[in-house]
Image (cartoon, rainbow, N blue to C red):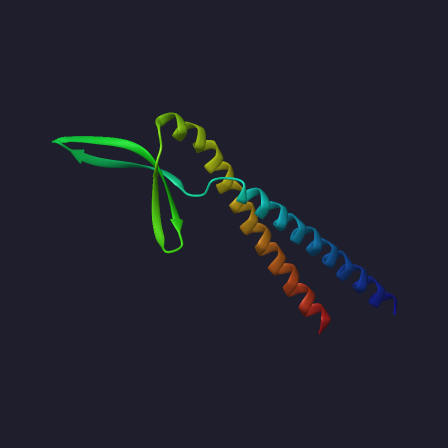
Length: 111
């Protein structure tokens, strides 16, 4: 009887950890949505025998890849924002994996 109480307390801890992870995932999603999506690249354009290279922001819009032309100043300003978004997305993926692991443990424990 005493062992059953200990097991239940462990599952309660797992449930509270899962709730915390779900809340964190929601906060990460909201924060990710505030940053621009995509990546910086360079486009080459040939015009009148000359080749011009300029920065652009690439991102997917449904199934279509969209290129947004940027000035050098805009590219420098957007670079840290894109890096921050990428870091947050990595944290979100790790958090989703943690939630899946906890869910598997909870399902196993209910049997």
